[in-house]
Length: 120
Image (cartoon, rainbow, N blue to C red; front, side, top):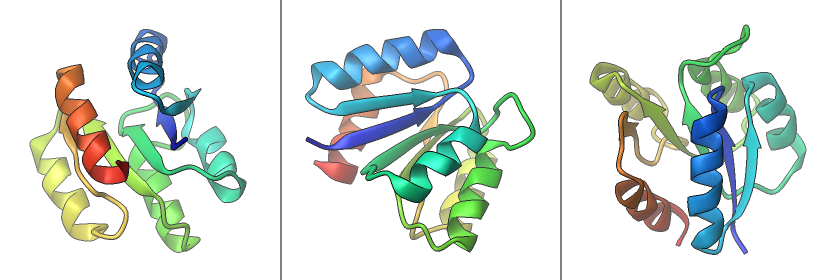
């Protein structure tokens, strides 16, 4: 079973995506802070990261991507953001990590399509 790590400081969105992701046969790990996610990604087997780019706390989603790049941790990431400009920049700067970006607000069906493209 493929594992998806979802990082979002909005609990309602985490609960919604948890239900959708589990219903489609994936293992779900949810967290609210990028710092926690970094520790998990250093040691756990995660197939895909759904990453809100604007998080509470010191580390933002972009910081997490930069840290993964520096540490040479290669995980597929789908950032979730309301900024089209940021999406283009991330795909250009981190082509090995950022497999797709989703604009907020998003339809769960479209997100599932991108998840299936990324990890099957």
